[in-house]
Length: 257
Image 1 (cartoon, helix red, strand yellow):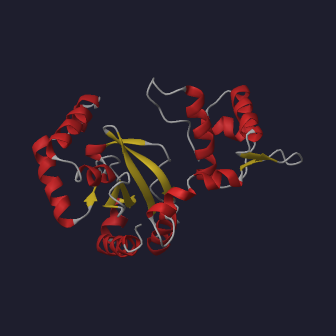
Image 2 (cartoon, rainbow, N blue to C red):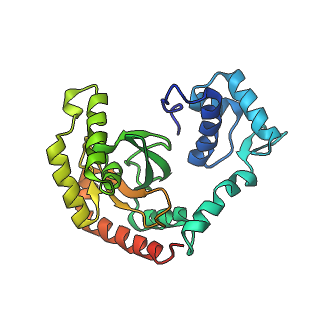
Image 3 (tube, one colour):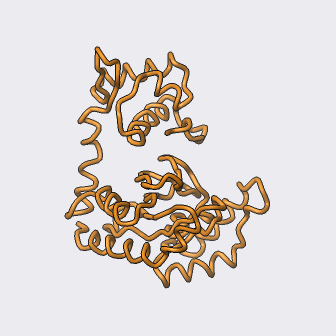
């Protein structure tokens, strides 16, 4: 379940952020909901949620059942980003690849992109285990402390990496969360050599994620994909997870437009 809208920059228009949070709520929930459900999950005033929902229904982005009083995204929402995935991947959407990886491994599969000095999760396929890594779409992580962020940093030149690491360190409220710049640059070289990155409890002490770069056209925004879960379980299946990621991403690379 969503636990409220993620903190955003003061430059973001509140109503725009709330509208997108509603759509992401349905992506995460994957079933119909009432206005009250939405307001409670996103911590919105009932009156604000009601106004936003009515606007989305009027615009055709949400459907409303008169008898059930349940809301759900319309087919119009499903089509919004369809052309983007088709333009990148000839053999099916990236989300299909994520679902296939989850079926093979059973753990949480995440997709992320760079957002300034941070990494942001843009799509998540939940694990089938009761004890699992729980992340929400839109969550932001320091680039230098997350597996997906490290994988994306490895695609950048050194001066950009240093700038992002320094920004992450400056934003860290706890000194223990700051990253040693020299050690991280050495780790980036190792990530480039082996083709994957690991968080090893840096963000959540009991969890780890193994991440790789999503193959795509050079003009596309770089994306990283990862498999995450409890450290003990992921560590035990580390080689298997790496093999599954490589196999599915190789198939995806064969279909890049």
